[in-house]
Amino acid sequence: MDHPDGFGHTRHYRPERGFDSTYTIQDSTILMIPHGYHTTCSAPGYTNYVLWMLAGEHRTQAVAFDPVHAWVQKTIGLLKSR
Image 1: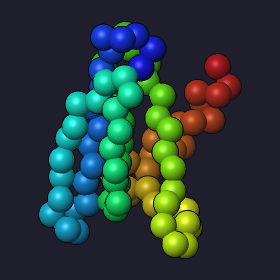
Image 2: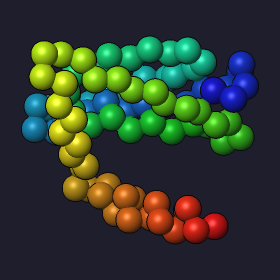
Image 3: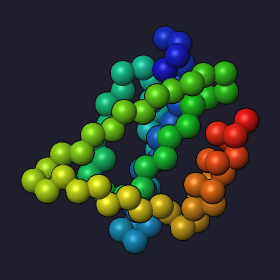
Image 4: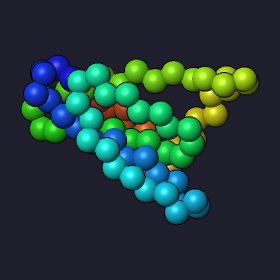
């Protein structure tokens, strides 16, 4: 977080497994997310930075976007052009 009092939320979910949890995140929060989708947002007025790492025997990065939110990926070009 860009401020010690800042906070945000991470949603970790996987509909086909019936799993959906939300966590409040603060500066230096660590979450282990072994599967599923994970989205993060910060509270208004704060900025967060997410550093994620891969672990395991195969270390493959199999990125999969939730089809419901796939449209967001298309907006990245718009944000970079401003």
